[in-house]
Length: 599
Ligand code: ADP
Ligand code: MG
Image 1 (cartoon, protein in one colour):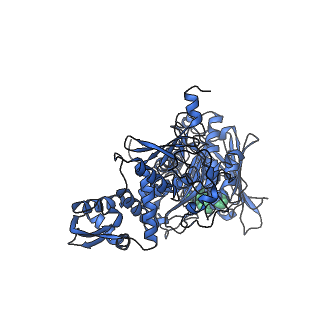
Image 2 (cartoon, protein in one colour; image 1 turned 120 degrees about the vertical axis):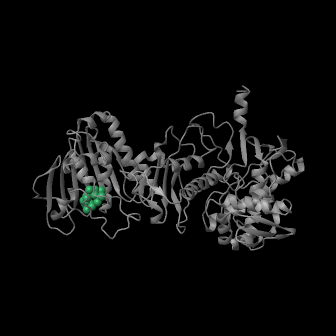
Image 3 (tube, protein in one colour; image 1 turned 90 degrees about the vertical axis):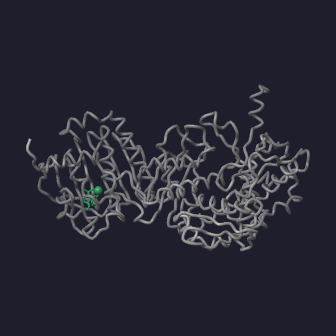
């Protein structure tokens, strides 16, 4: 065949194949248009899994009668123009492909009334053929009905699943949009039955309730977010006790756009590591904010995937945000939780139970026995942690109102595998990872000194020289103030080398001579992930804490073990190390009894 340019009609149908794969893609495109039009309510009605008809009604800005026909032309859009930057796009649509694509493979009726016109207008586009526009009475907004999808493309029709299957895809798409847009009231009904309805209050927990039901909504935790950071993640995630066997309950948005990202789903899963049994997944809605020009939304036909300039950074922001809320709210890990799928899998510590009965318990681990909870008043002195002073009236609550972590009363029994401190507590047997525990202790100590500008610096007898790559050198220059403040004395020496003259006090025993340079390189390596400000600083402090902590494989005497436990008890977050891994796991006494068939 000779080369020739395809007819518009054929070109549209080919293009439609990319954008409109199945009924769920029609729903997504239409609802995204409604969202772009500033709607506060969007109702979707489905018949026969969407193959029969899909109707989307919104109360948005509407389409003026004069533009109704052109809206169905290919590449017709009101959202960008020649002057637009194709990277930093704030609307969901921008390619002007949805309406022409849909109407080339279905019969579409659109009725719309825009804010500034008196009356509405109606247009019918029958498999690509437009009929003239006529006036129509209509409320403010747009109603689009799509019927007979793919009846002119039998090959496509063959690939559709059953009506039930297509409907569940629609529902899952719409659920994600409803979760990402909690301020819009969104509903879905199928063959007359309501499947989902959100109230549009703007609260994530209400959206979760509308999508997954009130029972699920009760078991969600809100993430703390730092809106001031250039990269941030907020949202809501389920308590580990609430989980599912597939990943479809994790919803992610970037700058208001719902996206699918295996990598970021994995970041969420990683954050739950140790909290959930194998092959179980949480409910989560994660809203990521990045600078607009850090994300390219124009890489996927249905815009379902985006490309990040700094994906590693986004990954760690997400993981840290989720991990943070889990480790504050769902503390000690119970051993064996991994075995029983769907079990609670966690010990709620006394501090979290809310009734205050157990209060803040700090054990005197020198006691060889405990028969009852220690008397609170006699312990009041010891429990006053810096920063949480005077908060005794609210046991288990920190000053900010978030639950404060506590350790159970522990009696040290010994050390196992030169790695774990073995202890007995009221509800079972506990294992403390000596390195993780010491890291936590050192981290809080180093951080406190850092925050109060009281860090120590240990001069080296023999300064060490270090060769760095250009990336690491740039990092040193960028963060020189923080590095100095924490006690590193470094000087540039040629383009890519440094002289280390002093090291942070806690590192002095490890980092003498050549060791100093090695530790410095390790610190930079671990920090090379990027990030700025607070997160970079915390990571630097965590790395220093790590390198100044007791290692696995180191023998600890009973007294040293007790000492470490006592120090751990004094920390703000005794249940996790600064990297978010657990410091302590529990073997529940009930499980022991069950295993030994005592009951
Ligand atoms: P895009 O969304 O990429 O601009 P579409 O083909 O989806 O392209 O829509 C074409 C144009 O029609 C939009 O730019 C918008 O101006 C208008 N439009 C479509 N749906 C609606 C709606 N529900 N409310 C208001 N305007 C709409
Ligand atoms: Mg669109």
